[in-house]
Image 1 (tube, rainbow, N blue to C red):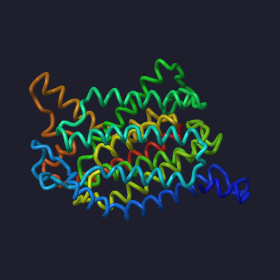
Image 2: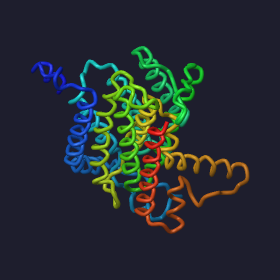
Image 3: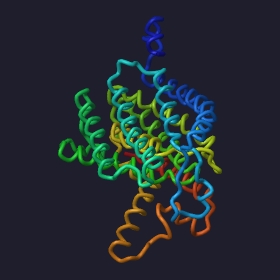
Image 4: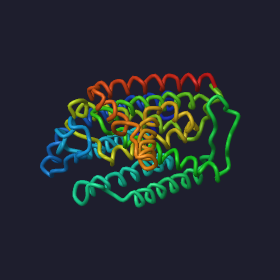
Length: 354
């Protein structure tokens, strides 16, 4: 919308600079999405209460969570919708990259949404894992094919070793698939405490936004290379940050609404794809250390119990372990935010050093 108006007013050449415009657009997308989400959520919460679309709490979960039974869920619909609509104002609608990015995010959001509906209306187990995996891999494969057809190279590199590149599709495609799947599902695991997902992902998308700005200055640093239309991802990051901040307004302890799989999978998949687009998939392991620990805690718990009938943690994901050890829910959340912030700062230093 805004690029179109600038073009009609003959201001696009004088105003449009990828660095300045994208930072400006990201800031306004953040503001618009925040205000929109904050204003819409009260109506959404009331609507979901009338429809009885409320959170289902596992019986084996912490007793302190039983009071959350019935709190409206699927808030991810508003969060992702706000991010996309606010981004739409600042990007040219002719950009194939924008639609690939949005399609990827919505694809995973739809998978999560189907899982949410299944849990609420059919079975508490939700969508079968095998079906979810097939659908997720279909979205990722389609995204990678469309990116390559539109000039984006299949390539991965390593932190602190920018001259080392892997370009073989037989390595890159499986690796990126695992990264996106892992990030989406780890993000979903992190959506277990009031404010935990929103706070950690605001920080993570902010870090990716900073890395995107570095990529917009050709030759600024060898660790980040410029790619066509990557400035659009910065604006999308701004929209997501604003939407998540608006969601946190109602999801902070005690939560009035939950994100649901629709939001957690969609935003987690966008995070994983963004790291790949910036050629920082390996760095995502560092900056998303909290997500990695959440996922590893579940995998090790399951493996340990199956092999030795022993549990390593009181309960997984690991945030529940700390709850059962006596930490208050809000303390766990804030401490995970702090860890994510520190890891994000270290990740930016790694970029600048590499």
